[in-house]
Amino acid sequence: MKYFEDIKIGDVLMTGTHAFNADGIKSFARRYDPQLFHVDEEEAARSHFGALCASGWHTASAWMRLYVDYRRAESDAARSRGEPIAASGPALGFRDLKWLKPVYAGDVIDYKSEVAELRVSGSRPGFGLMTIRTTGITQHGATVISFASTTFVERRPENA
Image (tube, rainbow, N blue to C red):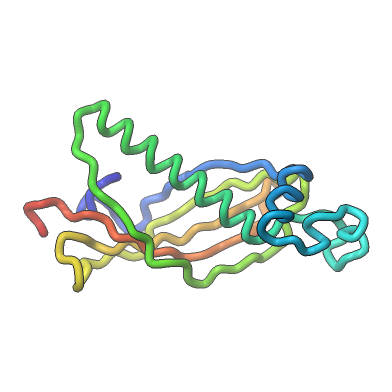
């Protein structure tokens, strides 16, 4: 993870891609969101969605997995170059979470996060607060999820 001072508004994180398939959609939904249009293809066909679709929570969870993997890879690469790694977290939650369109079996979502706001923490002087705006876009160019999230990021020791 970069130090707070090394992050700029407008920085983009291409966190990764997730392919949604029927088995994955149903498996996630059976555990966490067992509404019929997420677990039963016949019921889903009769629903307002018209076909099996992923839970919105599934689309958010897929991003979280990709984001953690992205940050881990970024830190591993910096460590291999002998660079220091800034601490981050905890996250302060999501804002403006919107599920804009359904995600169907066969959809591939590309997740992108952009730094939207940076400010020094008033309660934790060794940290700043980074807010990112995340979107998930299908292979057809449709935005299906968007949200903002804020996370603590360590400041350089000489700036804290």
